[in-house]
Image (tube, rainbow, N blue to C red; front, side, top):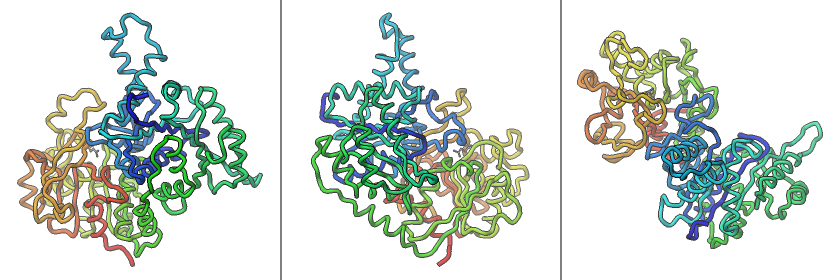
Length: 533
Ligand code: GLN
């Protein structure tokens, strides 16, 4: 298939969306890595947007950013949290990107006068991207490819057709896992396998016979139900697995799957050496999640809180830090455009996540003011750092009307203004300051206490930044710029000196937090929040 020994594992989804295909694919990745297998991961998304960067968070959830500045689907965040797979622009492809490439080639005349068609031109481009995933890092043994959407959708057909073609050329180098849903019908008092049967039929009609069927369900499935699925879907009984709802945390999933031997079966089918799985770190993690000592309550003041996925990495990063401190985490969502007097004051600390536009801005400013004046821990991410600075400028520097030019272009005191490179950007897509930049950490600061090192690399996604002409004024009144872009030009971390813990980061530390390696700033923030025994 690829001219070398790389194996491909495709994860398709059936019956309905939101089954947690990303978590499942990432958990499979974690299981393979626990056996010492080197993996890479790829998410294929059927929509026509080139990337999710221009989509509203209500539509798409969080936009996850990689080191090389790709704006991607939030599933890449799961890949990062569960695995050590390389993540870059090569780890994601949308129909929009595939068509953009094909059409650009057509305009250049690369197709030499041929009619350009979905098969073979679009499918070839998809196959090229699947094969390229393995090239990110030498020694990659298995590429896990998650296909977004649900089998039966018109949109995902070219992706599935590309997989069919790939599987045809070298069947022993690849396998397909089909994730379905087996509902429990309360009125009938039984679980129903019919949707799974239909979804597998739809996959077979496209020419893909799944090797393994993984059934999401509310409860573990009985042997009888698995036998039925095996019979009707034409797979051996040992190829039917279940993935019941987890009781404690999504980080249980690798263990749930491993207990049933899913990883052993994958290794057998892909002819991978059956090394011993090292799952102790995941087991330890689960153990500390199940027995927390004390609780910490964090208020998140944002404006997309009704959409569960809009701040995915933020929620996860808080979780990782809480687990590492042995604490139970309670999150209170506070909609910033409806924030009233009295809403604040019930949490141990407040976090203001990233965001865009004017709605809810003043609510966030009042949350920052509350935290500063009452010495309550505050953590600002990207927009949250800009909020910290504007609040400080208005009420400590006494610059009336101070603002970000994103919110008020005519402000008399533009303490946050457009990055110079942004002035030339005309397109909305892919033009922000994106990806990882080196940040120099100043000694004797909260940031240094957290990181314990002088240089870090953190990922960005923004157009506005602290206006350097106000830097001295801020510093003269007790604000410390504890993180500066390595070339000295941009303020990346700001903290209030005379405060237990009030810090804002212009980057998104949440993108680099893992359950087994929590982000130091999140750990430091939660440590500063007193919490309850
Ligand atoms: N809207 C702000 C900017 O573009 C913050 C962006 C963010 O929070 N990701 O600078």
